[in-house]
Length: 411
View 1 (cartoon, rainbow, N blue to C red):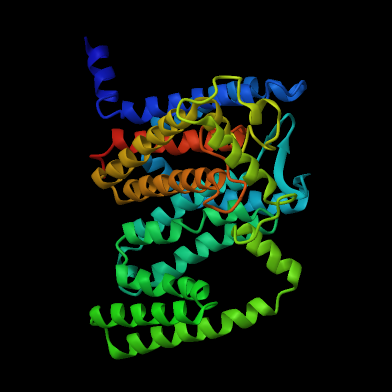
View 2 (cartoon, rainbow, N blue to C red; view 1 turned 45 degrees about the vertical axis):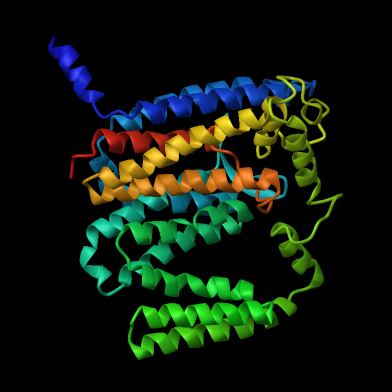
């Protein structure tokens, strides 16, 4: 009787909707990987078996995280971050190369990407900074610290080079600063220059944005010096950006424009995107059926079991299959926001919103990428795409949400 009571207590606030959504997404991913490599006629067809092994290992990691008190991760947040930075530095020295990039560390038969684990460590240390330095918010030192904590791993990952993964860290800044209590007006002042950079290539767009900036600043009723500094900063950014752009070589400009999806290169960078859109469009409402996708089985689409796995699902399971995947992710993300809002511990609440940001960014960019509304960045779809490091980190992110849900009333 006592054992039954203890078991019920342990699972009282266990979020089963998040857990089963994760399991279903993993199952869908394994089936899609099987289909994507079915006609390859090589060892690649065994990737689905490796994914099953990674999922099994991920369940062990999942269980360890769920039943470990969040106080442990609070206590060792700086240590985890230090190990992550050391691993990223080590990659640049002795990392294993593949496809022109140096991103992996090898430990015997095990190969992993430190950049994946650095995402979790960065979330931990930002949450710890807010927990330790609440009084610093008035002095706004916390903003500079958060930028430094995020930019360091971003620069090291960019050096590998891996621009797509480096950009994953950027959303941590606005989401965690906002959730940590930084004024929306301060966040507006920090990030609006990035919009000014984009708008500066067209006079009318730039002029319209400047009017919006001035109106927002006036309505905020801030001091005159604050208003003038922000206006002057954005004008300078708007003037300097076009000059910097024209100082780039033509091939450098083409790479940036292709990355942003503003120019097409059908035989090069845009080939995957074109084939992906064909696959998704040909799936229709119900899809062509399992193992029946022509784009998938005839292997017109490169990297279809990794970054473009959603196009495999959409071709063979149609609009309905694609929507099921999106709904399952929506359950995890919306429940994650609710978990973050209900957590009494500031550290736990910030970690939860960090994990939601991590998963949401990956899902939004990956699905947007395969549909042609986002640039091709090489980001995997969490829990679905093939890859050990991605699978373990995605399952760990979900595990932290369930851990925090279980301990929502702990400080």
